[in-house]
Length: 261
Length: 307
Image (cartoon, rainbow over all chains, first blue to last red):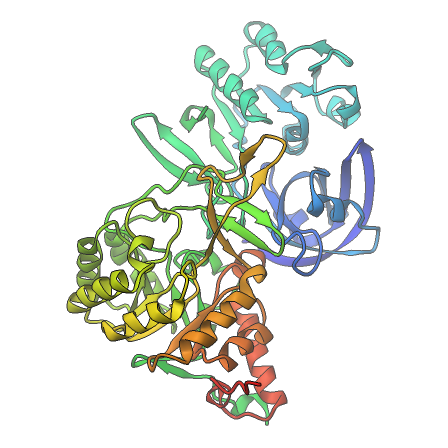
């Protein structure tokens, strides 16, 4: 069950240019979160930046009763959010959405993240301790590289790419996945990031027969399945439905997602 | 006056509502989505997501754009179809003490008549004729933007409709008064207004509209003064009850509409931001009545004093 909550901000820290990590004290979210789920945050009170902003849960401290979100400042709403200080209140609804499937039979897993899509994958990796975890993270340039230490600590192998080669491999993060895929023999792939990346990972999954879950993004309204704006095509080309990222997702099996051009 | 003694109930076209706050169509799903957050018994009624004869997938995403104090949407009437609503959603909604309004939309007048006939044999309380959705290419808004169009569709649907018929008006017209009068003449039992205002938002970096449908319907606090004006204009020229909506998110907002002549209000976009918006509006109306020593909500309906 999700709730409307008013919680206290513990800290806000700028991790990289325009990318912020916010820790929020919330017994309820920390007890009810699972990897893949998100919170829908009202960034300021009143009618400015009217809609809530959906932000995935990046880390949970069950003992301390807190959780982290990481977000990029993209507009007015996230700008307001980044200006919050320790002790401020934050109005949020959560936890929302479905979750990544965690199956103990999967011994070798890969996570593929692009840009600000990497954050829910960190939480997933933490919940998968004990299996062989390979992380593939792609960024635009070294300026945007964040949380490498944290990902390193939760991965048996970590590979990084940037579009301009300023950090790690120069090129697409999916090249790195393809490079390793035969040798590593993954049981499952989890991906979150820009649509072209998800589309490519989905093709790799189809070619190799390795099951893959993707976490989708779409412009969202309510976050609770009422407004029906965050539509995504689910099914096969001859028989599909517009499902909704907030309620039916954000996580889907890649072979059921139809990526429109 | 203590708030326990305040009578919030209203009657519209013979339907008794426990309070004047109704969830607006397209913003409340079929009620289930709000079960985590509010007691559905606490709101006067629910106008369900716009229904069509057959299931509809709706428009391509992106379907939403945030604008100053508002949103543009172009959902395009995604819904499971009227049969699925009757079989799966009415039984759920009947578990609550709230009035059910079925909002219907179609490509042709025959579609509307067929749906009105099907729904007349169910447990719903009223039908809301959606002739004002700006997001579908065929039908719908075409029937609602001229007095002739609205007269014809209202008259024909009325023949098949055994439930009270509410006609929902579009604001995208030159003179809403003549549209309202035409609907009343043709047999509408009540009017609801306003639907969304046709608008557009552009991503200047991509040089493209934000919505994949190019245009969409504007709603939220930004539209409220326009909506209040239109409700005021319409309430003064028709005898049938008017349900007001457009940017309501608080009791104070609702009171503005009621003073302007609305017998009840609908809360829409506010539900997206605050899932408790409808109950907050009920509470806010009650507090207002209490503050000014009114014992009934009827003491404020249409009681605006004009300069």
